[in-house]
Image 1 (cartoon, helix red, strand yellow):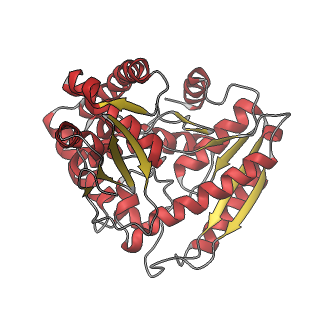
Image 2 (image 1 turned 180 degrees about the horizontal axis):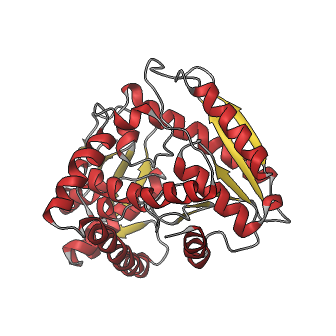
Length: 350
């Protein structure tokens, strides 16, 4: 895939094709350098702004920042810089990768340092997107996640957590966040940068097998290639098919709930087990405003509690609890002060 072909593949994906301005997250690594150049080629430099976050945790952090500044000057695009304050567990390093929240790196650092870095990066991007709006439309936030990142993310999630969501990978669009390079491999972004004469920064942590993402990349992916040369393509195709099927399943949940935030125990007991799980997960996640995939495993307990009559409560994880009263299940978000050990209130209790 040459420069023209990669640009056409991204253009055809449509994620950079509307009239929104673009905030491109620029770490300095090959993927983000490729993303920025493609965005400029498709949208023009005036519609694109780059954002670099200097976490100050790596010896090379200041040189990464200078490299991004030189690159943006070369490409004729405005660069916004964000320097981080003190970080939790700051003896660890934050690498150049723009990690997904469920990706290997997001869970491999002491004190979940990667999660802190990601939150800081996206908070800065959201602020910049709001300032870069045209009319009433905020800018899109574009990340450099590639097909290679997608495969590694899916494999890690499959090993670390059960359920369909583990196999879905990263969505091409999540709110204002877009991932235009999900159809492009890491090798192809490197080839693009070489053909364009664009340099990038290497991150030593990408070779450090203390991190789960590196073990997946260096051990698991090659092992799958040895089983079948099309292993990575098959993983990506499976994720795409499952994402399409998930849209259908979510439509069934929508139809079942009809916009309600509760469901009768009697009705829940009548549903096919798979649909009952999805309904409970939807209610829990609407209440928690975050993923609560384990909620679906508690359907049997909810039905057992509901059969007793009276009032009961069941903790579902992630600060959300299911309340059963008058034969109806609803969900509420628990305050942080409410202990996570609280599993259920006996029927008739407070």
